[in-house]
Image 1 (cartoon, helix red, strand yellow):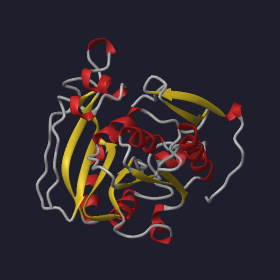
Image 2 (cartoon, helix red, strand yellow):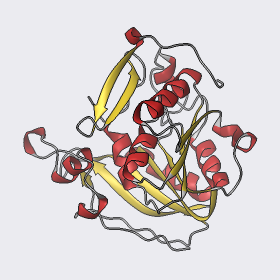
Image 3 (cartoon, helix red, strand yellow):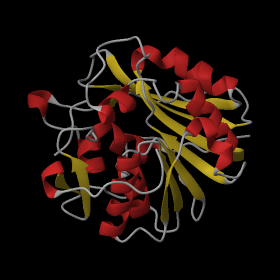
Image 4 (cartoon, helix red, strand yellow):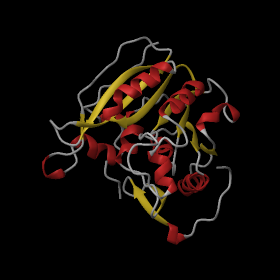
Length: 270
């Protein structure tokens, strides 16, 4: 999808290293690496897809610059969020983004490895986990020379199964995990979640245009849930002329969830 306009601590970031970008008509500001990994529309779609309950604890695994945590914090004022990022410099930038937007009291950013989640987080401590994990095998495709892009895209510092297991560790029974992943690896994603004890309950494919082959899949699962999955109509990104569809335009404008007419609300069952 096209991009949109280690340990605690880290080196100071200079202005030449970064851009300062805005979301939702300037209501959110985000510092990003000028040459490294930059967030895309995928992250906004995932943040709006996840089922969020009032006043619960959420975790964002592989949070990068913290954009999903920022969006969730803005949309859900009662939510407390833990963002986990393995790359020291990106974790430091995520902390700065929380301070920049006034969310540093509600969003805790940890620099840590999801493969060692038990070292720094308590089990069964969250009701929601969101994740936009690396999606390429280490030997698949060209490895980017930029470490931010390389680790974000390739399963070098954690596989899909590692992220699924970390989500299962964090979730209480009945908690939800929402993931966005390439459509051609949907079977891998469903199998990974189920193997970790998270039963897939909602699947929505994403298409660039109506009738086009799906490019991405949004999946939400329930820890300890019963089998049975809801598959609503695909989410279509563009209309003719490459204008955003009404649903995506609403997501980009941060309209309240109640006005999203095309997405059915799903209440996970145990």
